[in-house]
Amino acid sequence: MKTYLVTGGAGFIGSNFIIYMLKNYDNIKIINLDKLTYAGNLENLREIEENCNYIFLKLDICDKESIKKVFKENDIDYVVNFAAESHVDRSIEEPSIFFKTNILGTVNLLNLAKSTWETKNGFKKGKKFIQISTDEVYGSLGNTDYFTEDTPIAPNSPYASSKASADLIVKSYYHTYRIPVNITRCSNNYGPYQFPEKLIPLVINNCLLKKSIPIYGDGLNIRDWLYVEDHCRAIDVVINTGFLGEVYNIGGHNEKANIHIVNVIIKYLNENLDTTITEKLIQFVKDRKGHDRRYAIDPKKIRSELNWKPTTNFEEGIVKTINWYLKNKNWLHNLTSGDYQNYYMDMYKRQGGMYGKI
Ligand code: NAD
Ligand code: DAU
Image 1: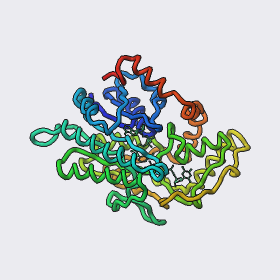
Image 2 (image 1 turned 45 degrees about the vertical axis):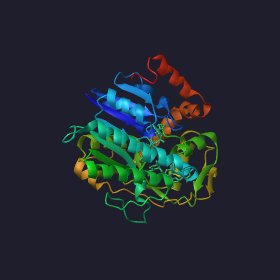
Image 3 (image 1 turned 45 degrees about the horizontal axis):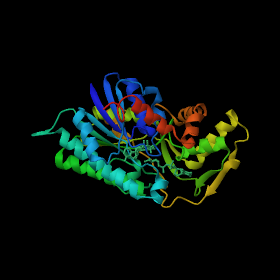
Image 4 (image 1 turned 180 degrees about the vertical axis):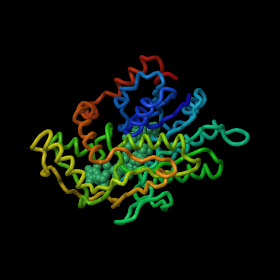
């Protein structure tokens, strides 16, 4: 039975990953370690919270002593490090926490994995540290080229530079100590449980509330969209078959301009929910500072070496996503309504551990 230490598992991708893994494997144990910032939401994990192979710990990845204890009391096989401050606009307003969590937190986890897994002759077999990184570390593209794993790191926002720094540190630990690692760099994800500060859930939420939709600049910036479940499957594949020390880009050639995304969502809601949801909600606003123009992943390496490719195309994925938000209006409502986190913390305490079962 393999034990996964998943950090940031109450966030968007982390929670999708935990659900994906527990649906697909019954012989694994998952420890979800999350600080529960504004972006962490235990409601995301409701469908698996009673699973006996799942444990939640409310901890900060920067907390050395507590996480040391987690490593000591559990035979951790894989660390999957999703925990991060993840929103570019917030990093522009308040960068410091991005450097603390995304860089120092990663260093803390790496050091603890290293000291726990180290043997006289190297590292215990079957262990791996997976750093969940992003295509934003490569900076911005012109009209035609693609990010490959050899594209030089050239981050532009404080968020991207914090993720790039963590990547360089992970790489240096592999080069120096040979600690078993992989780094994955994925393009923009979308799907259930994404916090409505990010473009797609923000647009859906604003349409439902009939609030104006802010489009930065000319709306022609391009992102390469991947349905979150395809990302989760790619991470699973990298954990199991990725070659040690390697970086894998994850994407599906789904490049779309922001204005196109917004129009698709408005059209769907107009035709299927409410004819008063129209383009009139769109409001062009001042551009994001240092706004990257285009991201686009070349996924050749993960396709050819690890045989992964996405299965959900954008047209199908966006309809699934919009319908999920329509069915889960309470989830959106609870994010703003207050004390759902206290409710869950009380529940975990009642279940007999300070935070879960350790
Ligand atoms: P998110 O903001 O939805 O979730 C982040 C989670 O990390 C939250 O649950 C939060 O509580 C937790 N967290 C934050 N600081 C922590 C700390 N100090 N200790 C423990 N937990 C902490 O983010 P997401 O969109 O799910 O992204 C997850 C990871 O994937 C991030 O590392 C991000 O850089 C990367 N990524 C995201 C995307 C995307 O499109 N969302 C694409 C590529 C890579
Ligand atoms: O590329 C991967 C990255 O994708 C991840 O590493 C980040 O964690 C994730 O947040 C995301 O970053 P982006 O900046 O690309 O995502 P965001 O949803 O914030 O913005 C997508 C595009 O939409 C971007 O060009 C900015 C634009 N935008 C965004 C918001 C929130 C708007 O025009 N209006 C908005 O209100």
